[in-house]
Length: 364
Ligand code: OSB
Ligand code: MG
Image 1: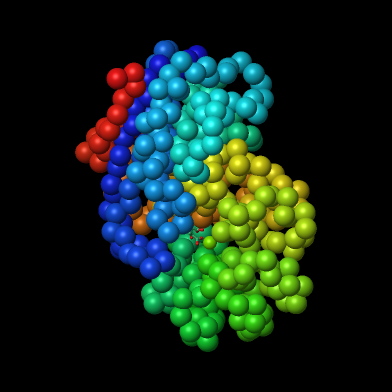
Image 2: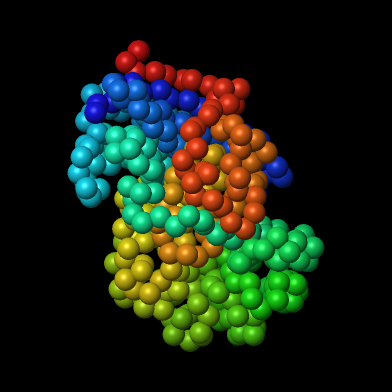
């Protein structure tokens, strides 16, 4: 089966409420969609949506790179018939270095074609899939916490993730205590400091939150090389997120105390890299937590598939509810504590043409 057509689309989707990304606030999410079609008419979609402030590449760089590469994808062979995932299959249409988000897009589209050739679903190509995936609820602003936390509990969430390191630490700790009271003891409470603190501050936070039973704290330190110092001095479980984009997964061999790794394929560089991190994390007793970077429904389908073949933990895909519209119609059912994998990954893709704009097609 050979790729015979490539189409590139741009999308713009409103974020409600607007999203604070570091210093800037964005009202819309922008991205590139890649659609591959084979001679036999099988179709695969992928999404490249660099996140400003987090991705190294910009959307216009991604679009330029996709336009340059697309002619070479025409005629590329999608391997079929093999029982196991060919290790090289995802690299096939890209023989040179590629930005993280574009790699995710191409790998996704090729993986969908591979599933189509094998008459199976994407999660089944990746591994052994569970039928449901649990989502963590996400509290990006501590201002609306008390009412929100109680609502999350009533909705049945098993994990809640809270952003910290953005205000006075004492106030944030008080807020976390209120949230823990509202959640009760059965719900996992995760926190994410996005590298806001010095070692001393992180130790103070660890000390002050001992009785909160935090499941983990993501990226406490401005200087991430001090992580092992922190974990040797406190028993606060720590998770890596930003660090996964800067080091190799073999770091987990030297950091036995890492409790979890937050894996964002859009930022980390696609499906194969994510799967490698997941495997090595599990070997070292760290939980891989597949997470989103505010992708549209196209990227989200692939993230659900990846989560379905990972361990049964609440994953970070509730960013989807921040989008006020999607490229996919109807929008995915992702607004509760649990998603049904089949209903998301096996549903035929139906694109809302009003939400996308075709920017190129090959062969032209
Ligand atoms: O800091 O974890 C982050 C999304 C985009 C960029 C950075 C982050 C996030 C998330 C993803 O929080 C959602 C989640 O992990 O639940
Ligand atoms: Mg994080």
